[in-house]
Length: 263
Image 1 (cartoon, rainbow, N blue to C red):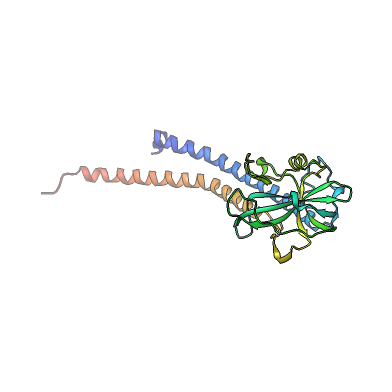
Image 2 (cartoon, helix red, strand yellow; image 1 turned 45 degrees about the horizontal axis):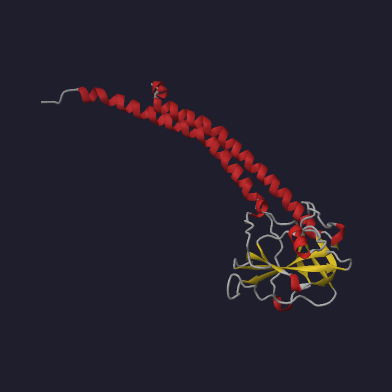
C-alpha cells in the first residue's frame, strides 16, 4: 500500500519536504544572529547615550573616521557658528514623516578647527527646489554646543544616492571631507546632531534620540522558522496517511461496484 510513495508526485513532495527542513532551520539560525547583532547595537547605543559629555576633540579630529564605539557619544564644543557658510541636506524627514531639510552649520572652535553641527530639521517651504530655504539664525557670539557624535554619511550606510549638480550649498549627504574642501578649513571628522542649546521657537526641530532596534522581533521570527521546520515532517505524515486512507477506501469500494445490479 505504500508503493505510491515511489510515484513521481510523491518523490517530488518528499524531496521538497527534505529541502525545506534544513532551509527553515538555517533561516531560524540567521534570525538569531540578527537578534544578537541588534541586541549588541542597542547596548552600544544605550551606553553611548548615557555616557557623560566629553570635549569633541577627545573623540575626533580632522580626517578622523568616527567608529561604531564613538557613534552617539555626547560631546561638547566651545566656539561660534558661521551661518554664512552653512548647508542644507535635502530630502530629510522629521518625526511626522514630513519632508524637508537638515541644517548643517559650521561651528568654528577656539583653535580655528571646524565642527559640523546638524542643527535640526526645517520644512521645505522655499519657493522652488533650487532656492535656498529660509533658515533660522543660530545663536550669535561664543557659545557652548552639545550634541551626539555621528559618522560621515555614505550611500552604502544610508541608501541615499549622492546626487551631483545640486544647487549651491545643498547636499544629499553630510561629508566632513567634502566640507573641508569647500570651506578650505580643518574640519573634524563626522558631525554632531545638536541637543543643546535648545533653538528659539523650536526651530530648527532638533533630531530625536535614536530608538532601539526591535531585536525581540528577530527572536520571534527564529522561533517561527523552527516551528515551521518541525511542522514539515508532521505535515508530510498527515498527507501520507490521508493518501493511504483514500486508497484503502477506493480499494474497498471496487468489489461492490463490480457486482451486477439486482433484477
